[in-house]
Image (cartoon, rainbow, N blue to C red; front, side, top):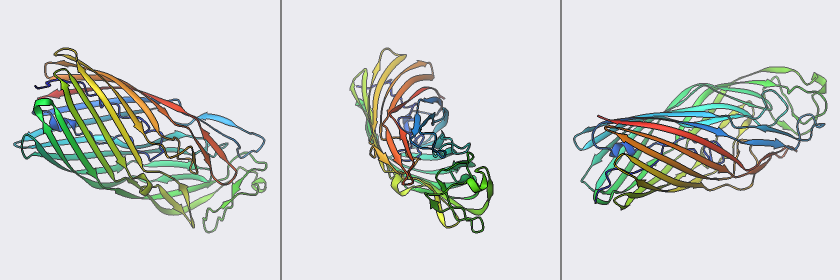
Length: 398
């Protein structure tokens, strides 16, 4: 029994990746093209639209008790992949957005403790798969993780993080029974750390009046929290000074992924994955002067997905899948923790025309709510929200 065609929609890997409960992962490496016979290329894109709204119980100006604002920004994620066979070795090249923090909390313009952030990481990987036999494969690869110039604004001011690149590697193995379209693949990727030169501009938040602020030591640039006081003396509108350059560290976490699929009959395929990432050891650390200002509290994540593909005819297939990511709890201490786990469904279809396969799909993910308390009297509520995504891809075989 051979499943020549089946539907396995993997083009919309969104789930909670915009929520940053566990980290700032956007997409993971997709090795499926390596198992395609002959040379092939793929282009895919997905458009993500969040409905993520946050509110906070107190602002700088204590006369305002609560403000709700849309935090997460819409995104488009595009990936490119190519693959060629060299005897028993298949070599694949992938380029994809691996990390993303895109939200507008209002810190930059004042009136909010929730940060503004624009940070993106792109990964280019080269992976080789060696066929030991029809049943066993081993995989190894190198990756280049490129952080684009980023800007993160908090209540204290704006961090400008310089562009930087790091390298990493991948190891893996796969077991297959081609007659029933069975394949189990395990992939391991170690932590990849980036240290980037950064600068900081300290800003007094506009508004005046009595509100919680931070003590400023202009001469040393120390940014130590002070939960009392007022900026009335400066009128609440001063741009204080530039702080000397420093280093921001951030990482892609250690990751372990298990992918599997198996034919149920000649027209039906079951597929799924388990993905673990140790985000607790991959915090964003930006320190200016004597203290660490950007404070993340990322937690380790484990996500599970299961799906079913059905071949309708020789040209058309459909699929449906469910994905769940464990949460870290309904409360937190960092404004970068925007969610508490997630559950999502994906529906998709594929159409094959000669040597070209087109795929399209829709994903809906619900993000668990979380309440943030920073210990300085400010509380932010990220209620249960959702992300919708539409995606499409094209694969051509040469």
